[in-house]
Length: 385
Image 1 (cartoon, one colour):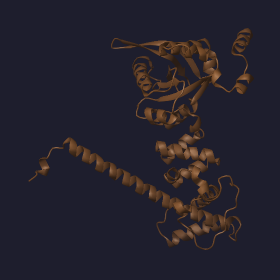
Image 2: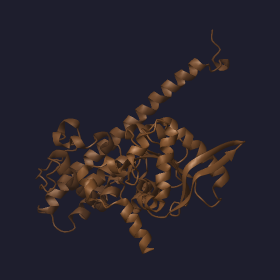
Image 3: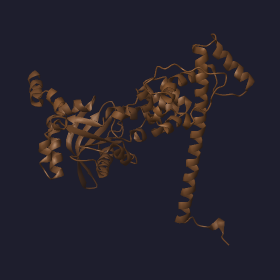
């Protein structure tokens, strides 16, 4: 007979608890998505119906207010059907109808006429247009109606809307956080570096500033690719890249963006008698944070994040001022699998990102020929000064 009260939790039992807990949480998440999807489908159907009758139908002024009042009279305790929310349903349906049930390019198609019955399950998978394949259905159904309206009140550009939905799902923003993020601008994740800023920055607003600030790729057209490819030693190659950047530090800062100040290269750090050097160290006034950039000549490797993380620990402990935000780290390498880089960076608890760079010789010849000579540009700048 097993004494359940005194039975120790063995490793085997812990694994069982973990498996059951995972199943419970996944089931709850699936149920939440199904509830959200059912609500969105209902609101979409109601929105189509209201649009067809209020835009070109026989309903007069004040009809939506009257309908809302009567619904609440006949269904006491009904939520979500205020006059304003019914208008939101109409806006929601009018925006998504062309993309979900017609060609995505036919965004100006008229809303179809409906009968007296409202189809409330329009989001059943079989009813979606094959042309809607570019829309991530799980993400679309994975946020609430309130989230959708926060986004549609801010932008009607389909690519921007899809970006906002993706970011809201990935970072699990509630509608208030989403609203705060949208106040700073529309997320453009396709141009941002793989990063963990949303999970590690002090606020959502600061995270979005960092996401928009650090690009996925930079053009360093003053680096001679032959110089870095001629050496077999990675340390030598990276020193070449670093020296070219330092020699052209003004141009590099302009490439990074606004409010960057150069602190130094090979910045000396020491802790417990161990010495290390950060390749490039900057301070950004807008983010109020030190920015450490680790240069690599080749393809991204997860080990680079561990090295950078160690530097950031010392920067935060020994260099950062009390009023400053935690340091930000960027691995700047020649190439990277973006999806893999984002996967690798997500479990670090300090703000980190991965960007790539191209040299002048990486650019197409036609584009390269349109650029002015770097040495001539620098000479003109020096002469003007």
